[in-house]
Amino acid sequence: MKVLVTGASGYLGGRLCHALLTRGYSVRAFVRPTSDLSSLPPPSAGGASLELAYGDVTDYESLVAACSGCHVIFHTAALVEPWIPQPSRFFSVNVGGLKNVLRVYKELGTIEKIIYTSSFFALGSTDGYVADETQVHSGKFFCTEYEKSKAIADKIALEAASEGVPIVAVYPGVIYGPGKVTSGNIVAKLIIERFNGRLPGYIGYGNDRYSFCHVDDVVEGHIAALNKGQPGGRYLLTGENASFKLVFDIAAVITETKRPLFSIPLLVIEAYGWVSVLFSRITGKLPLISPPTVYVLRHQWAYSCEKAKLELNYNPRSLKEGLTEVIPWLKSLGLIKY
Ligand SMILES: NC(=O)c1ccc[n+]([C@@H]2O[C@H](COP(=O)([O-])OP(=O)(O)OC[C@H]3O[C@@H](n4cnc5c(N)ncnc54)[C@H](OP(=O)(O)O)[C@@H]3O)[C@@H](O)[C@H]2O)c1
Image (cartoon, protein in one colour):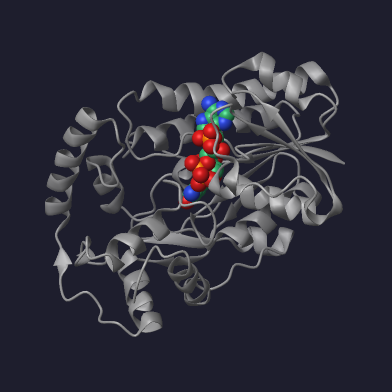
């Protein structure tokens, strides 16, 4: 079976390509001419074949040419940033890209299944409770334009499913674990800040909630969505619901270093975010922290993955188990010292 992976040069997409090749799938990796291909396996990995197809999800012709001869599309490509200077790009890539994938499905007539990587953000925040796949984004308020674009794309995926397109939407939580350190790998980025002395305290007072999921568990969830996911099905691929405070506490235990001694109020982080955005506009380098990041931190994003456990045999590891692997990995790359 030949599968096309969009976003193959990304954090999740690269790990997905590795796993698909190991399982014997023929993989066509859809990448941009400018993509850094370091996350992709060598062409002969696992004895199966990896091909590259160049294009852009916003360029329909390049996408349809790349999908020709494929039976499955894993659509993981997205612009994953909390803030960029031209927010309209979130919509052209994250919404327009999915629309193009659906158009390709209709035009080619040979695609048997689409696995669409949505996001917990598409379902909306969960202040004070744990949500499941039945939650639909209220659409009243969005912390980030990224969240808005993923919520709009989710509605398009749902509509396509109701029209009979065999699309399975998966909703990862906050993905962490080894792999490319892109903006999508926020846990690695924050641990790097923490262990290099640039983040001296906890972020806020520990009231935030995220569902932390290991990248390899999310990859397994994607492959299970291909093999077992109901067409039109939606599956949360999340994990342990916890705060970033717990991440730092577990990191301190693993590294036998001191926990942060104080909490940095979100207002201070927001002010830092505004300054970072100003610098970003001057230097062109995207900020790690921006005001929208803080709007996200003021809400809770806790989800249940019971449906995926039941139907896809999804088996997320605990945060402690995952971090026990991640922290030595970051050290081995020389990105942190302890
Ligand atoms: N990371 C998380 O915590 C998280 C959580 C929930 C859901 N997700 C979803 O998971 C998916 C993968 O995220 P990630 O963390 O792996 O992000 P990532 O590392 O930033 O990777 C994004 C990928 O999309 C590609 N891409 C961006 N714009 C494109 C365009 N116009 N045409 C073609 N490809 C384009 C990038 O290509 P280049 O290499 O050329 O830039 C890259 O390969 C996304 O759909 C994201 O919404 C991520």
